[in-house]
Length: 158
Image (cartoon, rainbow, N blue to C red; front, side, top):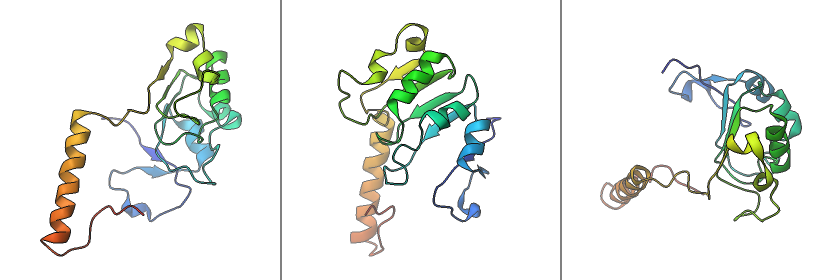
């Protein structure tokens, strides 16, 4: 599609595993160079508050942040402040530090032009007809794999 894909992984892996020619960068490098930053990581002690005021300030002016991983990874007050300042071009947030978000969540107080550059959804980013069909099909194939083919399951979650 003509874009360069980069990623940051706090647990470095073999770069040959990435099948779509993505380049591994340090978090600071990624934030400084990306037009769009989309988060896909678990909430762990190492990822708690991963994106705060310092990281948001490193992002390019006009960049977009998409938060669909886990609440607590992004400092919501810092994000609201950054949006209000006009630094970020926009943000989409599907997960919150407290769910549902409390009435005093700073993202709910974003106003004016900043509010037009903010999309808030109620933790439903992955709920589409296609994703549900894929999940059901994958689950059934895993059942067949284990019970019929006597093979270990794929994509096991611990």
